[in-house]
Image 1 (tube, rainbow, N blue to C red):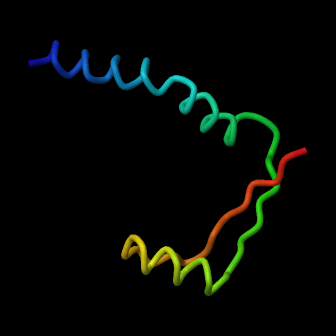
Image 2: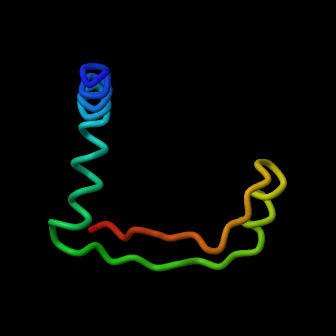
Length: 63
């Protein structure tokens, strides 16, 4: 049982390595400026197509 858990954890880390690195750089690296958008059109399109309710949309500014 423990072998299966270790295998699953290792598999997820190996498969998602680039996502883990890019996500961890938000906490470790230089701060990235963000801003939020409150747009009713985006909320309505997402609600109509997926059924999800959005509070706001976050933008990450690049250099």
